[in-house]
Image (cartoon, rainbow, N blue to C red; front, side, top):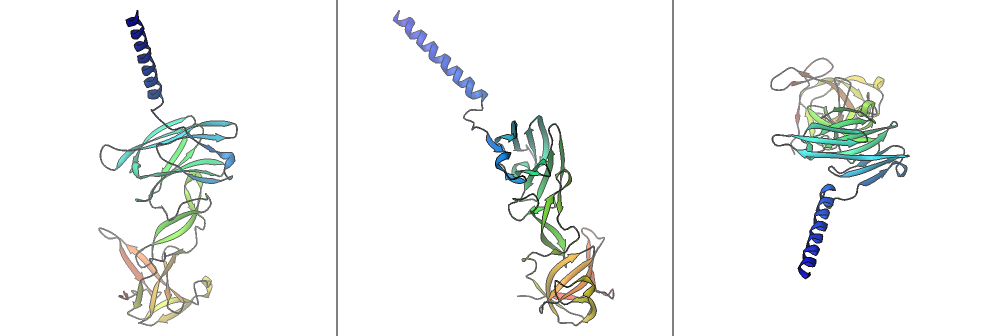
Length: 285
């Protein structure tokens, strides 16, 4: 009798153990509860930084649904895998450098978007999230120079040319299908402070368009002869060829900067307004 009771008790403990293992196995072990993103607690338009491989629950008015983005390193090379779960969507895709990305959920223009961003490489995939569809694209030339917080004021760094490669920091907004678009598509592209530190000096007199300052209007420019020995720094570009440079006294002069076909990369060609080569050199120290 006593032996039977012991056996029954042992069987009961084993059954409880198996049920426990089954329960935790079905629920991913000690998996955390999904993080709730309640649209009612957010501004009308918002940017929320997410964690990859974490479960979320979207609460949007009367509806709620699961949301997650899994980013995994591939078996070889730079390509990995992404898996998006959003409402009725379960989408897998190959993604360059997937394991290095940071996702952002963005609400703008009455729609939902997902930015999957790689700061180290400048990789950016942007997706429009519908109820049953995903419209995806990418732009690998954009970088965030600080954490994005407003869909209408995305802090974007782009590459420009001002006497060679430089960078400009602009404000963008979430545009059509989620694509980032510049707030001022036709404006000046100013060099970053780091790119504007280097000093240069002209080594030959040049015909340039001279402005009283950086805020002068386009029609105020005057064609003058800029003498050799003029000290300047890089300032900005505009249009297809305009390069503006800043003199030590605050005046601005303009030359033309073009890139000619060459291998392995294009050849920079900078000319003054008389179509003569603009000659200058770096000031060391």
